[in-house]
Every structure is written in structure tokens, then in C-alpha cells.
Image (cartoon, rainbow, N blue to C red; front, side):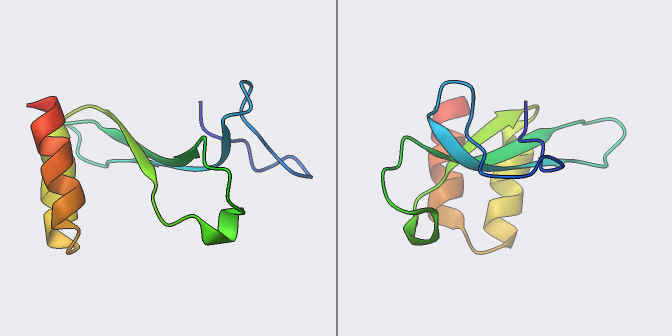
Length: 84
């Protein structure tokens, strides 16, 4: 479940392994998808994190296409390999 930012104060996941996350839901009616970006087990301060984890529920090909469109091809290629 994504982080509830309506709460005040510092947040961490229930298992204390994630401090920051964002969740995005597609608006495509026939191909629903949720992408979550988060810092998994990264010991550095949040403002120094430069490698993020991506979780996908739905069509990994859509995420691959989105990353290619945004110039994030290397990351998209790894997703494509992992979920093909």
C-alpha cells in the first residue's frame, strides 16, 4: 500500500525498509496499471538517493514504453528483461 501522506511526521513502511514512495495509476480503461517508485533498503539520506526501485502491477510493456518515451531506456530495458 502506498504511503499515506495525510499523516504528519516522518514515515517508514511497516517493515522499516522503505522511507519514501510514490504510486501512479494509469488512466487507460482497458489496461489498468499501478507503478510504485520507492527507496528500498537505502541507508543514505533521502535527498542523496539516486537509484530507485520500481514495482509494477499490470502490463510491464506499458512501463517499458513510458520509460523509453521519457529517456529512461536503461531502466526500461531491465524491466522488460525481468518481466518478459
